[in-house]
Length: 205
Image 1: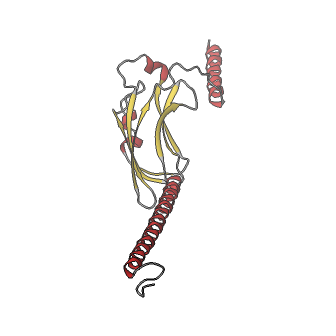
Image 2: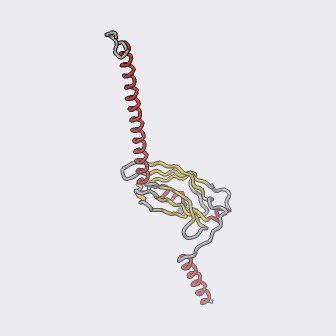
Image 3: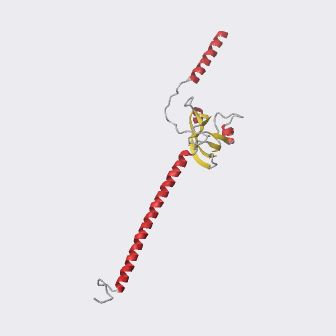
């Protein structure tokens, strides 16, 4: 065997083998690095998703709806509610177009109510603010009043993080649905007052 050969390979052959081995080692290392990078990215993405979910779950969340009054389905209320888990501060509500109702009177207009013209200092979690929106029967007889409103709600959490959310509310959502009035203490008191008036009227005859 020639002195410059080993296992049938010349020094040049062994140099080629070494080069191939080096390239192979580099490729294995590169694959490991790329895999580790991908796993790190997945872990960071998962952590960020969990963090976002935690922040979302713990944040204040103020919504504005138009829904039936608790007293009767024939009246609808404008409801401002914090469905989040933290208090909302300095809540400002803008309704476009400004609400006009069949109940509006000089000095008693919903669009001029403080909850729609001034910031609400604090809305605690689960707290809600209600104002009569309109009488459903009377409003259905009007064709000049808007059916939908764009509501913009701006507020901040206790850390000062601001929120600005826009939604659409519609007062005719339950149009065509059947319902019943559940009579309660309010109705009983009203009925007693009517009986009292009737008795007084008959006593004076």
